Image 1 (tube, rainbow, N blue to C red):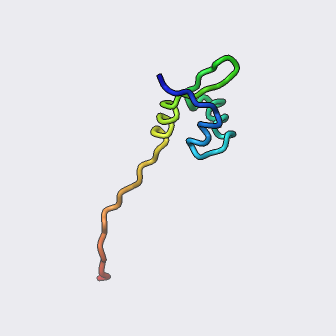
Image 2: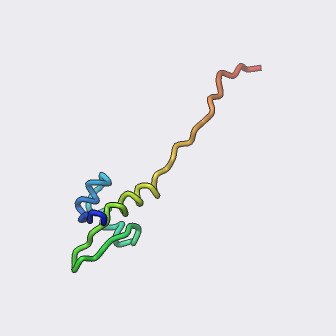
Image 3: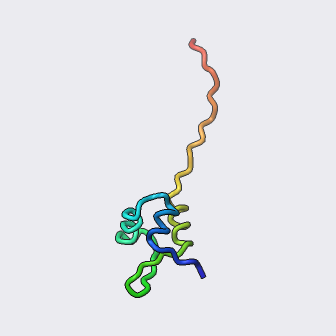
Length: 69
């Protein structure tokens, strides 16, 4: 079973403010669990969110020096 994080812990993990973490929950962009009136986010859901939104860099081939004709 995953560790359940509160909104503050999610914000710290993502390096953002609490407002952003709450917006992820409100817009249903991250999986969450309701425990009574409390909202908890599984640690694996945070990792999945980061993985899904990770942008890989473009690898450019070295062109070398070109001479004018």
